[in-house]
Image 1 (cartoon, rainbow, N blue to C red):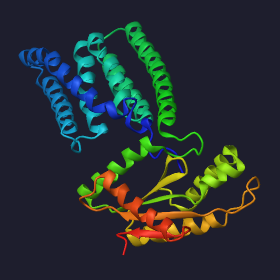
Image 2: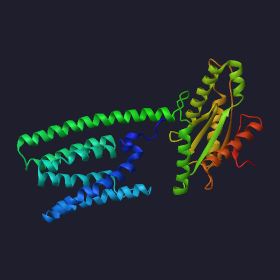
Image 3: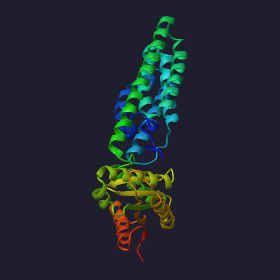
Image 4: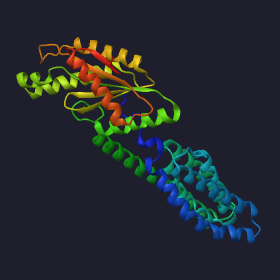
Length: 335
């Protein structure tokens, strides 16, 4: 099971801070570029002025939609095109001063787009500007621009790759349980709320299982905490071996775990829980010469549930499973 379902790299170096960046960039870019628009209209460079207006419109529109937490109307390729065209015009009309706008544009591209796309966009921007600039300046100035932009591109790429790597390491430290290598409760809270939002917005069903190791205290008492840790690690591995790639398993604490089953109703979750129960009961560990069992409570998400209520219903089912003799699966509502 893949530890990170989506990396920071997928959304650019800023990750979830993209909204803040676009909003701040939009506030700064409107008053900054407005004098240039007026100047080019006065000089009758209407195409140039219109291209700048289009870029501002695209940027501000996406920023507003992100602030409203709605799907943005303009994709990354469209934003890049809207940004690249006026910069190429600037290089064509103004020469080197216009080409200098490509440097902040390159930084913006790396902040807002996935790393591979940022590299491609950077090369496209370099080609477009150098072609336009070649008609407005001497060869030495043109070569200096190409060399400086290329060096800046390579250096920025290295910096962003380092930032992304450090971000992913930090993300792993705050969301991964060190003993079992699975997600912890912090990540669980986020994923449960995402499932609730998806159900309310898109009607995507989800179910959870809450399970623990039967008589785990006696394992710790009789064999020690080091053996208890081995049993917990084995327990987590057994759960992961049963669930699907797009499902999640979290360690809530101690020997208690929660499994989030996406696009699953109560019948689906019961079947998965039974498979987990059977898998656990057949596990043999070299350092723990006995088998162990698990009790499992299942609950399907309802429209009115909060994350706490959803967990509580599965907990009630788990309690019933324990009360009725352990090593069994109980679904909520309990009949």
